[in-house]
Length: 280
Image: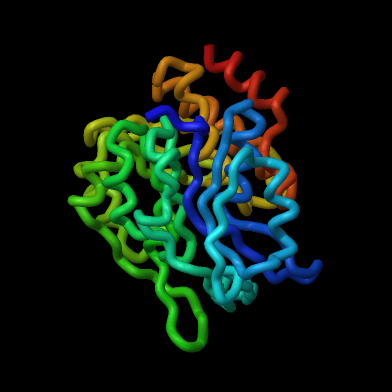
């Protein structure tokens, strides 16, 4: 089946509560801009409240958008204290299941599972056996109770992971369960563990190779992991699926992203072409 898409994103867009007001966020929002900068045909399967005004900022960066109506838009609030950041979930949109994926999209070559509020049913991974499937893990590692405060939840499912080609997470995501790094390294063919300015580790079939990242002045780190992951997956077709070169592109685009704030941290088309050229 031929898909009208090159790159499919599955996950919630978010409304982020900030001192500047209610802003568009979420992995799909950052990644959609990356996919657009690569010149790929992108599609998004997401959920939000009917009439959500933030959708107007997302639509220009995607060719196709399927919206599942939710009781609310997934909403995050970050509270910064001397002891660090405390994150709250103030609203959650609808769950996304395998039945929600449009049939015409099942043949999409590049699929990015981008959960943020545990909204993506892990069984969706089994729908894309002929695709290259990437998972940004963070949203499957979150739980919260009535107060909305986000806490760590351990997730590891070998049955699901057998149909996921690439997993990306930061060392901060698993700070409460560092043993997960080795568990995932043994379960997926390609694992990328990012370590901020220290670069990261790429595990290929369980064997680790460290990679570096350009050193830049950090303005705002939010979204850098999303840009890294989307840049990695989006670059693969241009690089004959050479992961050692793709991680160079991803690291370059991730470094660019921390020098800017908000969704403007996603790369431009010129920055994408420069990163691809630098990777050979």
